[in-house]
Every structure is written in C-alpha cells, then in structure tokens.
Length: 581
Image 1 (cartoon, rainbow, N blue to C red):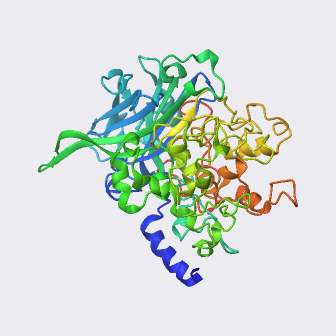
Image 2: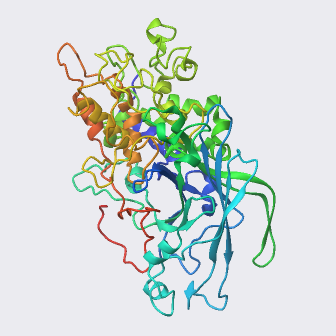
Image 3: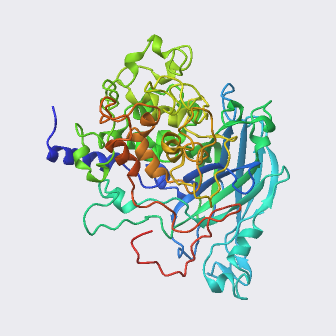
C-alpha cells in the first residue's frame, strides 16, 4: 500500500534526523568520535601520482571542520594517538600487508606567551615519528624521526614578519616534505579541507541541489581546514609479492591494493589535577575510513560506533552490516513507491524497478537473484563456481550485485562487470573490458588498480566524475564504443578505482545508489524499450548522469606536486559572503 505524501514527509524527517548524516566524507559521523576530534579520520585518498606515475599517493585527513582563526590553541595532531594508513595487496592472506604508523609529539617552545607563534618559536610545536610494517604488523621499523609539521597559518605577522617565522607559508609546506629512509616522500600538516559538499542543503532534509527560485548552493566545508598525512610510495613497495612492475596492464590482478586509515588510542586515560593525563592499556581503534560516506550515508546511527571500532577484515560475514548495502536507506528516497516524493532534490535519481522488463532493484526486491543457478550465469562472476555466493547471497537483497561489491570487493574483469559495449543487448555477455580492481577480502576499503594510467589533471578529458565519466565515454564516444577491445579510457584512474582529490564522490555515490553501475553493464533504466529505440541513452539515464548537487569542486585549487593539497586557510582572511563555491 502506498503512503500519502504527508506520511512520507513525516517518516522521512524522523529517519533523516536519526540516520542520514551525509555531512562530509567522515566529519563527526559517529557519536563517540564526535567527542574526540583529534582522532577523527575525515577522508582517505589513494591515486597514482600524476607527476610521478611510478608512485602511489596515499593520504588521510583528520580533525574535521577547523576554523582558521581558532586560537590561541590552534589545532594540531594529538599525542597518544596512532594515526595509521593500511594497505592490503593479497586477499588470500588475512589482514594488511603494509602499514604506515604516525605518532606525534608536541612541545611548548615558549610557555611565556599566549601567542601561538612568536620570534620563530611555536606553542604546541608538533613533530612525528613514522614507522612502517611490511609483515602484516608483526614488526615495525622507524623510517622518519622528528618529522616536521608546519605551524598553523595564523596570519601575516605570525608567518611572514620578522617577529614571527620570517618565512612564507608555501615555503613552510615545502620544507616539511621529507624523504623516509625507505624512499617514500612524506608530509604531515594542516591544509585546506579537500572535501566539498553542500552541508546546509544536505542537512535541510536532503535539499541538494537546493530547490526554489532563490536557492543558492554552498560548499559547507569552504574555508575550513583539516590535518593531512600524505605519503608518496613507490608502486614496487605496495605490490603483491611476486608481481612485476614492468608487466602491468589495466586488468592485472596483481596490481590491486585496498587502502584504509584508522586512529587508535590507549584504552585507559586517567585525569589528574593540573594539565597532565596518564594513558595506559591496550591500543583501541576509535576511528576508521576506507570508502567515503560509508559510515554517514549507509550505516545507521545505532551501528556507527561499532563500525568505527572494527577493521575491514572483521566485516566479513557480518550479516547486519551487509544488510545496509543490500537495501540502502538512501534508495528509499529515490523510489516513488517509498519516500521519493518527499525529496524533490533527488527527483532525477530513480532506480531500475523493471530493467529489461524483468529485473527489480528497489529495496526488498530480488534484483538478479532469480537467475541463481541458471546456466546463463556460467562463465560470469555470478556463477557459484566463481563468486555467486558473495554476489547473489539470497532473495530480497537487490544491491548485492552492485553497491555491496563497490564497497567490499571492487569489480572483477568478468561478465557482467564489463561495459555494455559489445554485449549486443545481453548484460551477462562479455563486453568491453573496463576496470579490474577486485580484491575479495570482504571489507570496506578504497580499491585501486595501480596499473591504470594517470589522466592528466590539465587534460580536457579529465573529469571529477571518475569511473562514471569513463563508462560514459566507453558507451557513447566513437573513440571507444566502436570496439569491445580493452582500451585505456580517460578517468579510469578515478573514484571508485581509488580516489583522487578532485573526484566528486558525493555525486558519484548518489548516482551509484540510483543504479548507474547497473546501467553501465547493460541493465538499463525502465524507460528503455529496444523495440522502439535502439539507443539505451534514455531520459532516465540522462537524468541520472546530469544530476548534480551544484557543488562540484573544492574551494581552493589543488597543487600540481606532492602533497597536492592546498595550503590551509589563513586565520586573518575575511570569510567570503559568496554563497557559491
């Protein structure tokens, strides 16, 4: 029975208030970590370095929504926290193969002043030790000691003048780049928050893009800072054991890595009179992040702290967590038989309920499960002899074939996970080889095929839509859709094949919830009728592809060289009044 619009609005408002905290990739996303911002992991990035393709850049940001003028105790990395970036390159071995661990020390260089920077000295001056493990965390070696962290970008007198640092902030950032004893480039410090999203619109009951004639969209993270750790790592260091750098192609399974980040604290903190605390006990993970928006837009509020406390490997077989991907809450607001009418901003986003006249991917439907055991699945990733137990686990779990693998395995180079180009209308047939970033370890990570070539950031072909744009080119551009052969299509190095700083992940993930991945492999939208039109580029598909939150780029341009992030906003800058980007 269908509900009235009033009932939908009431239900949506209650659900939104409780669970739909699409604030940013991971900014204050869970109740416990919201009270511990120094350990709050806000974003993770992994991409092939555009200026040095022999390396991969790994990046994690912490401490959300920093006001540039937030003195006199300006933000900095915390002590008694392990900030870690983890890499898995072999799904047959449980756990990480490579771990980078940062720990920070803070020293008050001038306790006689309330100013943060004076005469070249800094209150709460931070340095770090970087350790690396190549044996699954059994042992760590120190590869950087006393790593420099640039001071906060307070203002011109504190940075440029002789009574401050007598430097420039660009110089301070550059001087903080160090080379580890094992060869990695390393940088840690404050930066502009590279994530962009209309927080105000999203929090206003999903009003993104904002509706109404006078609506003005705004990047809610504009002129906020974060603290970033960045590594530029040789591909040879991250490769699966036995793999060769020189023989890679874009379908090479031995060049796939999974990347996630975390923060951990000692289990016990004892407060004493004065300004001291004593930490003791085992280290406990309090925050983690792999794919953006997982703990915000997928995991409900009652499970968010639990999700932060476990590793991606502990997700394997967690039926309750998996259920939030099989039937995602966001899909309810893209379904007119549920609560789609309550969210006009999402009107262009509608999920297939009758794809090819028979497949329903709305919440609670069976998706492709009706084909379970059918001989038509032989030779595909959905066959029981392949990964059918993972990808078709049961009835009533429609998004087990697209959303769940995006977050938990990546896509294999097997039908149906190839572009519809060359399939002659049969989504289960072999099509145009696309992305192989399949690492079936069952956990939420960024998965990156390190063999995929870099799309230059200054290229006309570069797009912040990542794999969505690459799929569009593979399906519609005469340079690529005239053959089912493997080709290096621009933006195949973009999200969700890793994540570049420029990628518009909010838009991409909302399009993915709306079934764009299903369409790319030939499970077209409901308004496609091959008897009346040879083209699957229908109004529904165009609506999904043209959907935008209207916040499509960062408020500051990124730089062309490591560490790529923009300098942090200065505390003395007058906040702009332009409601746009």
